[in-house]
Image 1 (cartoon, rainbow, N blue to C red):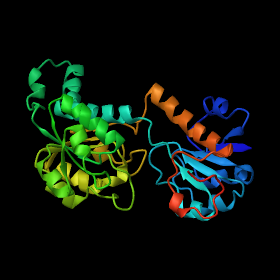
Image 2 (image 1 turned 180 degrees about the vertical axis):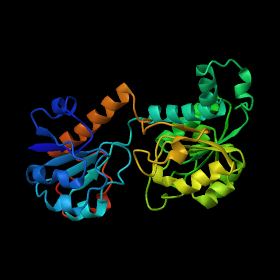
Image 3 (image 1 turned 30 degrees about the horizontal axis):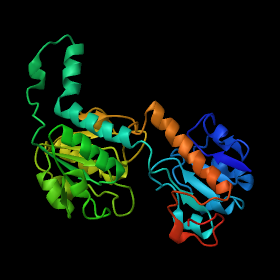
Image 4 (image 1 turned 180 degrees about the horizontal axis):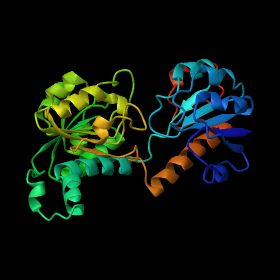
Length: 328
């Protein structure tokens, strides 16, 4: 059998040993969906990262043997789930890697902005020595952090934030009642009250049609003046033009951004903004976390090819005449 690593990776040094004796691994290094075409006829499974912007029915129609696409990541919005399901192809993800890394990164961005790290570092490098470059630094204890999304990563962020003495409140219509009690935080059942009270808003939600531009001009206007937005979720959750407007008007004090509507970032108004801290979609990464991600994606493929049910099926209700063993 053959497994394609569609994109992003240059080698199969981790996936190969996991799939040894089960399948041959082919590293395609695709930049576009069409780059996969020469390899699809013999593909039994595909591991997909994020360089391929969208995987559509064109791929699934040309892959008669393919049993599954495993998205090596939490989000799976670059796969047409319904089209895959109609062809009997399972789509899976890796929802439980990188939790620590992204939560740490969200706190990193929050601290960098509130402690004026960018400004103070630049002053020092220019030869300065003046503690007043951080003159407007607030005390974190007692301030309110609002989390939009409180799944694995949001929960991990909440626990870290509590250690700083932050008052944590979250909005997430997808988690059951009682999570707030388990975490020792507060909960809002509508987005607007959270935005109105939070000094800092950190995004931890999936990207889908409900959350695309969830943080638009109207939502930004409801955030309290001088507040800070952190996004380590997905770029299109935020209306980028609206965010730039809120920053330029001074309504927002700053923003910490790891993800963007268009990647790589091509917007100089964000790249050059003095109150914005930027990282290149790297929140997910640590040496250990990257190995975990790749290993778990390959293990899911191995299970499927050996006739075992997948653990992280995301298009189950859409599967017609599935080519995999269904979940028990």
